[in-house]
Length: 255
Ligand code: ADP
Image 1 (cartoon, rainbow, N blue to C red):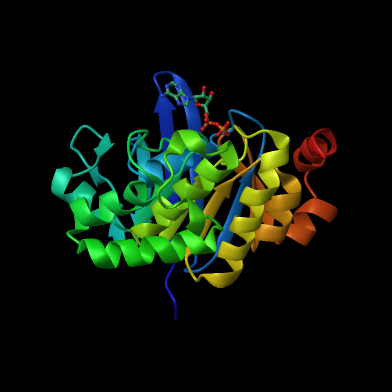
Image 2: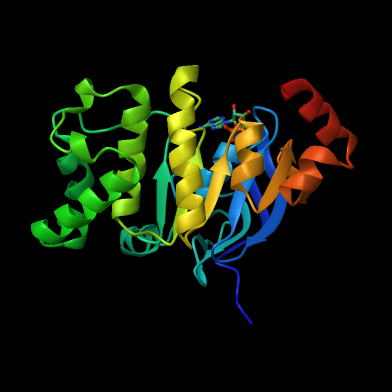
């Protein structure tokens, strides 16, 4: 039987006295496309940042590709074991952020090939070939030699997606990737994401406020409130027949 690629078990996360995740448990199967929705402050981004090991946890367990992401210390706090373990685990996961963070002094092609060449020791020619294929996929093959300052926000975000994909992670995390864009630029990024979801068997977790997009993109939608999953299911069920009152009132406000 296929094992989950991500197992989150009774996960707790506090920032000081603020409990952000409160005994959260869910599994993700390989290839699944998940949309995480819910009010601001409900802990969605924190989950992605924990998976990316940008945050530590204060309780519970997180397993990725069959290995624990954090190891228990005697005082109860969990922390990544060491830099080598972190490096080893991080190769499984790529993340695209709200702000694209491209290297401003590198052209588009170099932005995409830098990490594969430097961190994975890939030959430049092979890294560039794959980068060109990825640029083709995001519709920007003609911008390979452009500088980030010459691109629109939507184009920058499409380069950021190609850059994350270039490391060939098994899991991709997308955090509000359209929320910093002008409305007319959102559509081109969503189109790329839909193509990506349809064409790859990568596991994808997406935090979004674009409900129409979540509906089309996801196999499963998780609705969060106050650090817990209130309701989850296929998009048709969550968006047209939500059963929980909090889901209903959230969707009424946002749609
Ligand atoms: P969402 O993505 O659902 O909007 P977040 O995961 O970003 O929610 O945030 C959940 C809560 O955690 C918020 O109240 C936020 O202010 C708080 N928070 C997030 N990161 C930090 C941090 N580094 N320090 C203190 N509080 C934080």
